[in-house]
Length: 341
Image (cartoon, rainbow, N blue to C red; front, side, top):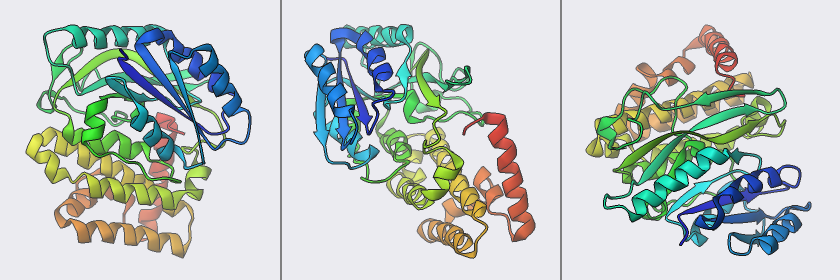
């Protein structure tokens, strides 16, 4: 019996993957770890095979042609046999004590009389590893800790709180029910992973545990400003997919609070695309920005007016050069304040 499947997408991860996998092995026989070697050209595949040889009852390894992060997650989900499913990127890791506590809670639900949650939410830690500084995002003001709840029970999300991939442990059946399939050769698909299944979630359990350590510090990370600018077309693509596959109106049928969260999440993605297009300071980028907003308006006028005039994203689509200046200045302040890059 495997209570939890942990999928570890790896691409040229030889320098840091062992820290990640060693942290996951603390789950012992209750977990399965699926290492997906996504067409690596370094020793990633060799290291993965060594782990499989040493822990054959826990670790599976898949070697595949490079398809990107989304393809690796798809592969892990297709093979998952655990009751729950979590993605752990190969440069990140789990806190041992929090990890064991989560597994104990999953076992309690599995063998108990009460229905198990569709989604566990845990805290995550921005870990500026080389600077030896951390910043923890928790959800104490959003979800009642230590008991089952629904979307109607949720509180107000603050500016720094989002249900990102690092915080989520979905029931495997929910992910499959949602039809989740991430696009290949595309960055930022974790946004789709974090949002698309939410309309299938009815029961949520918030475990107030600092579980996931999100490593920050590599120059090639997708959240790095210069890297994001190079990949801005991919971010725009994922933003449109989030708007397409999860319409806020559908969330309204489940809970107005879920619908509000979905709009807020989309607003942030629109803001990120809008700001980074401005950073190019080119006519072509300004045109892409205009087209993005026009496309949203054509798809859903009501949603467009909410995003444009009542939410954060509207502050990143202010008219004129003064509006552009104010947008970029506000972004710089937020970047320093929340240290999200």
